Amino acid sequence: MLPKKNPELEIGRNSSLYFAIGLNLMLFFSWQALEYKTYDKEDIDIGVVSMDAQTEEDIPIVEVNAPPPPPPPMAISENIEIVDDVEDVEESVLESTETNQSEAIADKQKVIGIGEVKVQVVEEEVEVAFAVIEDVPVFPGCEGLSKSATKDCFQQKVQEHVVKNFKYPETALDLGIQGRVSVIFMIDTKGYTVNVRSRGPDKILEREAERIINLLPKMQPGKQRGKPVKVSYAVPIYFKYNDGI
Image (cartoon, rainbow, N blue to C red; front, side, top):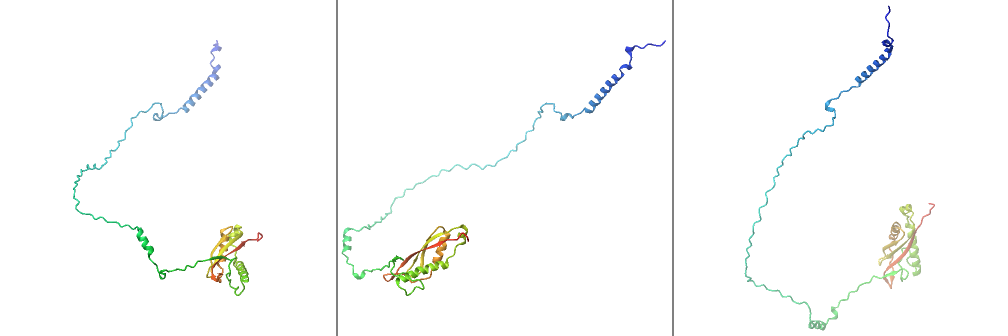
C-alpha cells in the first residue's frame, strides 16, 4: 500500500520562493557588511563641549628702576644789604642846538664875497628825435652830403643793414610766428647805438630784431645847435614767410 502525500504539505512547491527570499537576505547582509564603517572615538563629535581648564600664562614681572624723586627745594634766604648812596652823580647838561633870532640876524648880516661863490656847470644831456634834429647822425658812407641828402642816406643805409643782417629764426618758422617788430634805439653823443628796445608779436622776433640793430656801426653823432646830442630813431622790421616754402 502506497503512502499518500498531503498536497498542502508539499515542501518543494514553494522552494523557488524560499530560495529568492534567502538570496535577497544574504545579499542584504553582505551589503551591510561591506558598508559598515568604524570611527575612532576621539574623532567623533558627540556634541559635548569640552571644558578643559586653560592654563594661564604667567606674566613676567618687570622691575623698573625709577629714578629717585628730586630733593625738595631748599629755601634761599635773601639778605638785602642797604648801602648808603654816598657817590654824587654828575648830571650831563644837554645843550640846545636850536638857534635863536639874534643868531639868525647875525648870519644874514654876514657878507659873502664874490670870489667865494663857486659855480658848477652841469651839462644837460638832451635827447632829440630824428625827425626834428638839425644835423642828423652821419652813417658811414654818407659823409659830405647836404642835410636832406644825409638824412635820406641814413635811412637807406639802415634799411640796407637790416636786409643784410636779417635772419628768420628757425624756432619762429617751426611755430609759424610772423609779424611786425617796431625797434626804437638811440645814437648817443659818441655815435654808438644804445638803449635798443623792441615790441612785436613774440619774444623770439623781438630778440632777433634787437640783434640786428645792435650790429649797427659807429656813426658821427647828431648835433643840435652845434653840440652833439642823443638822437632817437625807430625802424620797423617785418618777419613774414611764404606758406609755399
